[in-house]
Amino acid sequence: MAKIAVIGPGAIGGIMAGWLGRTGAHEVIVCSRRPLTEFTLETPKETFVARPTVLTDPLTAPAVDWVLVTTKAYDAEATAVWLQRLAAKGASVAVLQNGVEHRERFAPYVPIERILPILVYCPAERPEPTRMLQRRAARLVVQDDPRGRDFASLFAGTAVKVDTTPDITTALWEKLVLNAGGALTAILLQPNGAFHDARIGELATAIMRECVAVGRAEGAVLDDAMMERCIEVYKKEPRDGLNSLHADRLAGRPMESDARNGAIVRLGRKHGIPTPYNHMATLLLDLLSRPAV
Image (tube, rainbow, N blue to C red):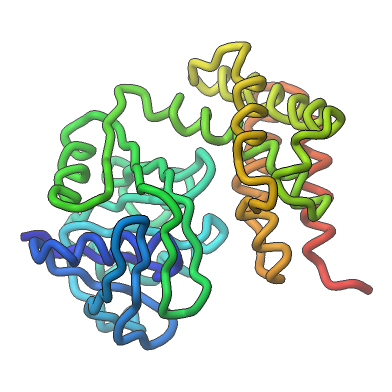
């Protein structure tokens, strides 16, 4: 039995904690800002109630075997207050967040060799504080090494599929290419149906082309057909669907634009690769998130 702490009971955190606790094979602790006695997890095949141990004070956190970070990418500093105690005895820290800078975000708080970037494919939302809605099957991807395989084993007996890959760098950049184009619908406040407009497709392709160039410089193996495939993915999504940037902007929440398009700009600068489209997208989303003057 492993002792597992999940930091952040949002949609993804709630789903992971719910499935991990359902098998009875692990002791699951949820680290939350607010008290929470139970929550309902609605999945494509069943609905069940999860009742994990919930902590709201980092000073009461015990040392655990595994920490799953499921907070937003911009919350690294706030998340870190939990890590001092949770990871005190050498726990591995699995970072289930967007972007490609998982290790960089948490290297100031945890030895880098104990940080695992996790790629998350799990359309989900939290319509109410105690209700998690999992839209489709959950799939995680982790590096195929001893620590990654240990992580995958935690989900044995659950409905969460964990794949290992010999190249997590490429896997993370493939998703970032797809996510990068989603900045347009957040800027326009239009759902996924906007991608059926060829003009939007052209702009998204330009944004994603920059991402491919930077990803290659970072060591990812990305082919020239990626942009076209990503546009087709967007077109196959429900026309009224919203990506997370769009949903966060509508709800007045902070957006992860810096971890997505902003990362492309930062790493492009590092390699001397121009990224004007992503720079514009990042700047616009930052301005749009500020209160009107």
